[in-house]
Image (cartoon, rainbow, N blue to C red; front, side):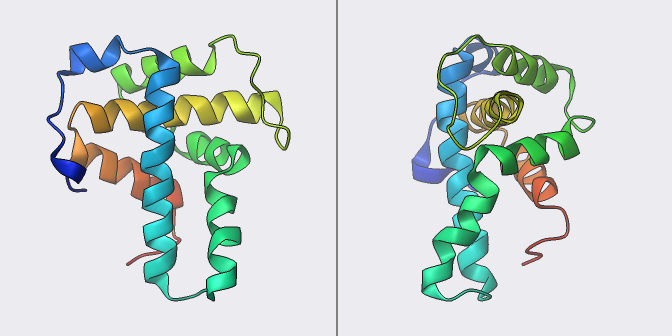
Length: 138
């Protein structure tokens, strides 16, 4: 994965003290762009189906599934960030997902945000690709 927009990465220490909700905010954008690129480049979908296909991966349920696949892949620091974000007390819950899915999705997004902001692009690419499993091999 490339350093989009010439971001000057921050240290892992600085990234790890950013609020979990802020990390998730960034991670959601990173994940959405990654999925959109994979869907578009797959050439498997008509224009009208691009959004519907993308939503399956970027909605809370899809991200919760991805986190379940990846939990054993997270290193100590990533797991700590995931758990901190997952356990964050919030009143914002998606109307189309369970509380558990929403919290696991938030944890997943926070890990992505942490990796992106701290410039760990190879690790981020690995996690994103692994989250898709066998889908979209291009």
